[in-house]
Amino acid sequence: MAAGVRAIWAMVQPGRRTAPEHADAVMPVMGHLDELRSMLRMCLGVWLAASVISFSQIHEVMLWVLHPLALALRLSHTPFRTPVFTSPTEGISLAIEVSLVSGLLLSWPILLWRVWAFIRPALRKRERRLVLPLAFSSAVLFLFGGAIAYEVMPIGLGFLASFLGPGTSYLPDISQYGSFFLILIAAFGITFELPVVIVLLVISGTVHPLWFRSHRKQMWLGIVVGALIITPGTDPFTPTALAIPLILLFEAGVFVALRWKKTGSAEQGQS
Image (cartoon, rainbow, N blue to C red; front, side, top):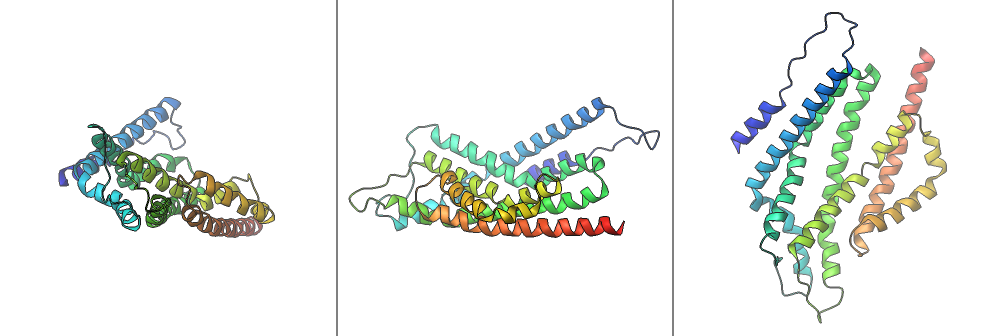
């Protein structure tokens, strides 16, 4: 594993850029495309290397992935306590899928750093001040959403598994559970980016923050309906666990956008 970490570190070291002969020289379009291709190849290599590291520890990773299901099975009436798979290739397919996703999460800070290094020269000073806080907030919100999904998952799964009562038994299929797990984590993580989206819309001038305030009831209703639609289960706990934090995040995003708007207006007034 240490060798894999050293390999990733060697891959992400940025190459030295040749300084232009004149300070106002502009890199040609092909130069930007070459740098973009180089960055994408590097990001792909880092992701695959991190996925290989995750695959090498797949037993520990799967114990973490299956933990919510194990808790749910204890709450249900089913006699089964471990998931099953019926195809010889089903186990390895799920292991590869989980490794790719965990590799993406593991390499995300490095990927974000390399993307930032690529776009930084094209940004103005004020824009540079905004990119890092927004990127950091985006990563934290995604992890926060995924953590909430992970914690609420046993409750929802336990409710669904025991809904029909002791007359039936739930046979947990590992492939279906893996899809359920990834969809739920992604649904919570992506929707928790709502404050970042609101701030970006305000910064770009697309929407004024007061518009969100004037349409608060419609936005709240949209959040509740969206939570019911995008959560894969039909239990009442999972959509509720998604809708309530999203409403709070919506209000936080509007508050931050209003503060940014007032700060920007004050700076323009002073200049």
